[in-house]
Amino acid sequence: MPEYDISEIERLIDGKLPWARVQEIMKEAKDADRFDKWVQILQTRQSWDDRILLPLSPSLFIVQKKNKERVVKCACGQEFGDYRVNWKLSANIFVRDSDEALREVYRGSEQPDAAWTQVREYSCPGCGAMLEVEAVPRGTPPDFEILPDLDTFYREWLGRPLEDEQEFTDKTLETVGGWS
Ligand SMILES: [Zn+2]
Image 1 (cartoon, rainbow, N blue to C red):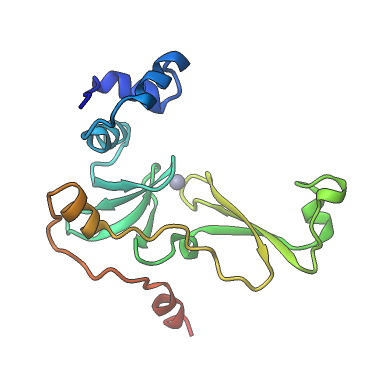
Image 2 (cartoon, rainbow, N blue to C red; image 1 turned 45 degrees about the horizontal axis):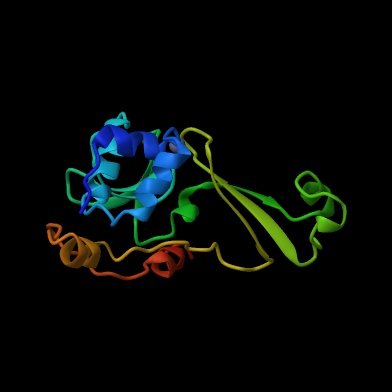
């Protein structure tokens, strides 16, 4: 099983590795420690030191805080709460739901009917980074793109269970219910 130098993995994730080398890596058997090296690289790039459990996007991470809480956190340090609650509930949301607003991002006949479709832009309240965009029918709840089973992943796939295993469940509706 191949093992790559961490600097090579870093160039790979930054898109700086020559395509010929990327192809070689793609054809090889998978390196067993890729996840750890990937997380290690991302961890060194953050200004905070909460442990990254799983990267969700270039800007968002599920981290374990010192008090063992698992939250979604932006690269800027802004936190979005329990990872089992859709982080979009804690983001700034800009909704394009008029023909005029949709015209700013679509051209001509590509533009959906504003009577049916909304484009929602989610950004970070801390740094303003655009975190996600979704085009959905009106009335659709925010799409919860990934709710990873972290404990199973660490226990069964990585072979090292996380401390303080937590119930694997979507807590989004519970949170919304608390608003009323
Ligand atoms: Zn941010």
